[in-house]
Length: 294
Image 1 (cartoon, rainbow, N blue to C red):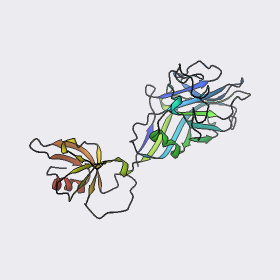
Image 2 (image 1 turned 90 degrees about the horizontal axis):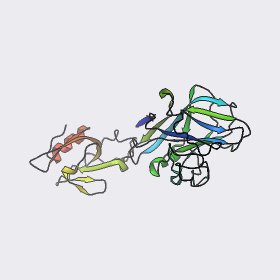
Image 3 (image 1 turned 120 degrees about the horizontal axis):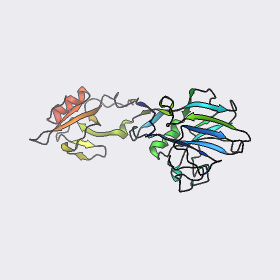
Image 4 (image 1 turned 135 degrees about the vertical axis):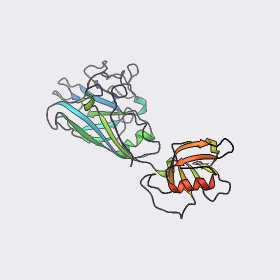
């Protein structure tokens, strides 16, 4: 299955924290992010967003793990109570360089309450993760995120997530402090994701080897002109063998699906030359499209 570890540099990363004690201050350029509360009963919450554009539309999330490098902590194990990582909703979409405890972008208030706290308005009603963070300093703490809720980043919208303690207004200084993307490169936040690419949603073209008119169809059932076939897409070969009910883990394993590596066009006809990844596909194009494949 495809997988990737996202660990963007400062220029591409989006992370910050908000501080109830300093409600108009933005910390987007700070080298650390924090979760906890001060002795004055003011909370500190972290906001992070990863660019997930690398994951193809329609993919199914299998595993998502957030890793944050712990620089310091106060209070020891369990001092923060249950902590939560929760998706932010569209109404409270925030900016790294603008958000504060009072505002989501330096101008507009959070949709629900200050601090991006209201379930169902600022943040969703379920959590990506809940538990007690590690207090092992100078090491990454790994948070196994709920893949079902993480799926919403692809299917609904990606507005990042909030990491916070359910204790709102503690009576002593308690915190965990992590390296932000502005900090040391080797300690930046990272997100590991593994996903599955469902064939029925990602295959762009199909071709029936027994079609006498040699037509290529798109995934909406419409005929595609040869000069409209694009590389870097998947194509299904129909009629090359007996139908099968087997479900494959990914498109690469499916013998009836091939990846189009490159496309070139014949100047003297309406034929197309296609370089595909599987022998069955190659032979099909040689036979049915009158072009050359390799």
